[in-house]
Length: 460
Ligand SMILES: [Zn+2]
Image 1 (cartoon, rainbow, N blue to C red):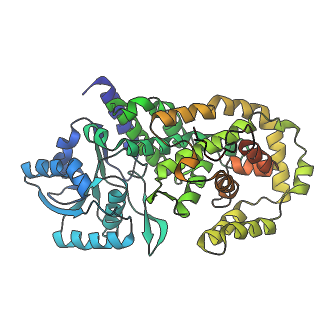
Image 2: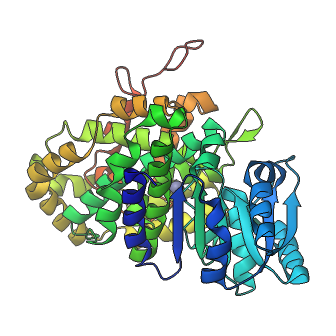
């Protein structure tokens, strides 16, 4: 094992030791050979159900099966067709539960998002641990304590235990489609504006920065994002670093007890598009792509905010002009109708709507804290065009127009995003300060980062 691999593994081991759920995370070249021993030590079993789709089986499943056979571990295959694309649904997971019961083996998932989520749910429903062999650095859900599944068409995250063991072989991750690695990079890039949102919430005494979760993500984030071009070329070191970022973010959420360490307004925009069922040319737009676009959007708003002087805000004048809770609820129904999203948004918005006194005190704090807050955010963030260039090098889409989102729809999503979660972000700061429409208008106006593009022009 090379020095950097040993260092990375030591860092990961020290994080995993603190996890109640994950007992081993192995990242490296040629690490599939460790699977039999890990099964024995961590899951105490010699009987598994190997769960994969046809592509995952060819990418890694066949090799894993041969390694297990060598050690005389009993394997039952549960292989899904490669086409049509497998759905993360409770219906599919229920069929998997039946198959696992029949064979009596523990689940060994060989795949990425959907295969991991189906196995996670099926194992949890039976009160069993499971084992995960990752085939792509495409999302941060490997280590998360929930499975986003659709249940009769409605998508929600069902609480489940993460895998007991995660094995990520760099030779396999490097062979995943470059596009999928880009999704993982996009998801990790979202941790930058998410960190800024936490700095804001901390400065306004709304949600203090946590001493454990914050450094886990933010002290390494620049490292995880450092080499987008190498990543796109399948470089093992860049791949290992990205995979570590995806899993460590999941663990930071476990330690903190919510997704705050890894998700801010960038994810709110992404969730909106995902709930709308955003697809382009007949294919659902990936979570990582939505997050990358959300991250760029939020960074552009920060770019505008950091040119402002909020220390001169007239708090009484802002209070006099702000929208009442009733008009916020009317606005939610105008945007989302009357279904589930609207009902949930009303509850989230009520939970964070400040009373007059609370808002006045908050604006007072903002005025005093602004010079130091602006300096901290300026040092923490990077210019929007810099992140755009890094995303492009990683092969990630960098303009919503490229996935069929018009400027008008994009702008609307920015204005709607703060309603869907009570988590305090820059969107709430701008709204509290009476500046949200001005900020969004500037970013989407002539000369702004999301300036209107003439019909027929190609987005950058
Ligand atoms: Zn995410």
